[in-house]
Length: 102
Image 1 (cartoon, rainbow, N blue to C red):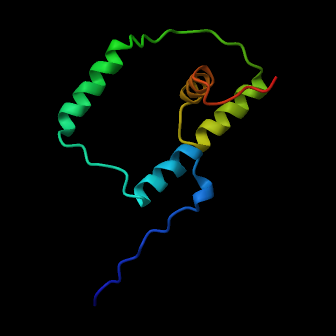
Image 2 (image 1 turned 180 degrees about the horizontal axis):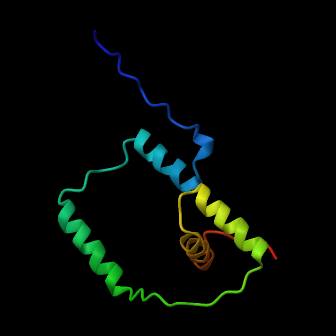
């Protein structure tokens, strides 16, 4: 008995953010090239990250219990520790990837 291969279904394009959609378009247009020496490329990227001096610092942050519960819930849904979610949000705001509405 032979089993028929099942193609995984792709999520709709609307489920991707703008950067991911642009990457999909680049793939469709054959605009991407293979990395010739992957190990060398990874080593160069690692050197660049270290050169940035990305030293981690601890901070104290006061949140309402309600807000913390909501953050922990959203983090759990995404399979992340809540501290990682908060750090990601702060990083995205600091690098102008998201805009804060006050």
